[in-house]
Length: 168
Image (cartoon, rainbow, N blue to C red):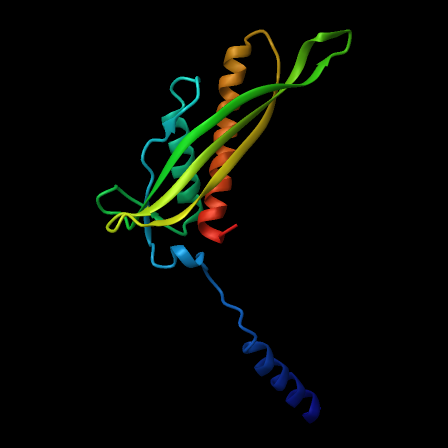
């Protein structure tokens, strides 16, 4: 019994020094950043009025994550500048009896992002993010596609948030 207690104590001491850390671990370039600002995205696509939708999705996702405080540009440690590069719809599945008609579409959004230090203007991180979703055709394809754009924006926001908080 005595040896068993000593073995448990020794095991606990060995495991305590294994280098594990509880809590947030920011990527190396972002280690000094505590607050972020997310201005409205820039839009290089032909889809109108999606800039605020994408920025709002990213802001909400970063707030849910909680790693960074979201604040105004003049108070933030860094600014996340994003540009929507591509918003494309492609056919995924055709109607059973008519190969020319599409029953399911894939919507893919691509954005470039740059995280700049607000004071120095130095680039802390940059990259591309993707957001995918699919939707089925219906009577009002334009409305259905607009709803799918918000899902793609949420998916893209998840990708950017993962890169900013975990580094990959």
